Image 1 (cartoon, rainbow, N blue to C red):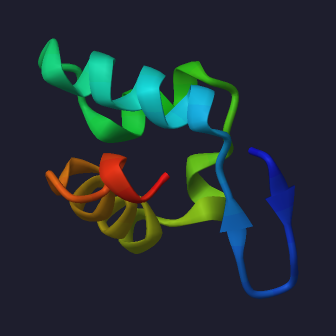
Image 2 (tube, rainbow, N blue to C red; image 1 turned 30 degrees about the horizontal axis):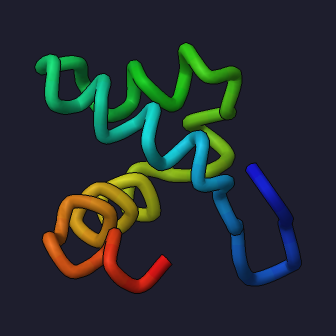
Length: 64
């Protein structure tokens, strides 16, 4: 994580790259968060789903 506010979690670019690389290898999304030391129960499944959808879009990398 790069920053946390009461309403937002901002993930580092390094974590996003790690996530996409591992997800591309077929690893489960909750497993990736858990292995990175991020508390899946606190972050929540819905938030992880939204990150997966957002980071997987082809246009996501161009805007960073």
